[in-house]
Length: 142
Image (cartoon, rainbow, N blue to C red; front, side, top):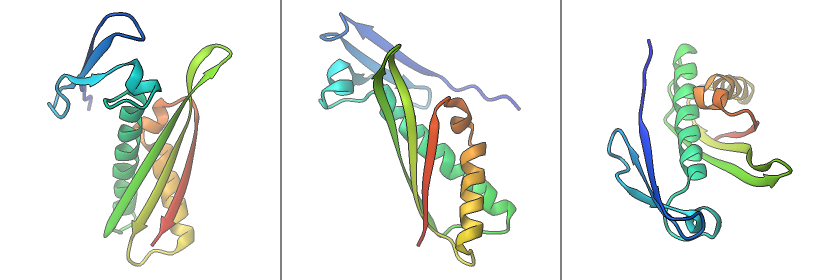
């Protein structure tokens, strides 16, 4: 199976005062604004790092659902936050980490097995495989 998904970006102007838009194939984002100020100065709008964080959180949570199903388990609830860090390095800007924080309610699951399954999902999530960076996971069974 081979799936292809499309995202697009448009940009006008110089880096700091330019403006861009992001669109997704699904239409979830359609010409949504992004720019230097939304990326570095906290101004309203999106940026690549928050999109990567959302993608990583979604992918990991789906991967964990798969792993749980293979173990005969189903979560009542899973909430995952992801924080992607962009920082300046000697070679320019780089994404240096992605931190996943999971809180899950899963009946009939002990802490040790939960940690093993969550780490398996972290390692096998396609977005985790995409990142060539340190990915940490803080998983809490509630």
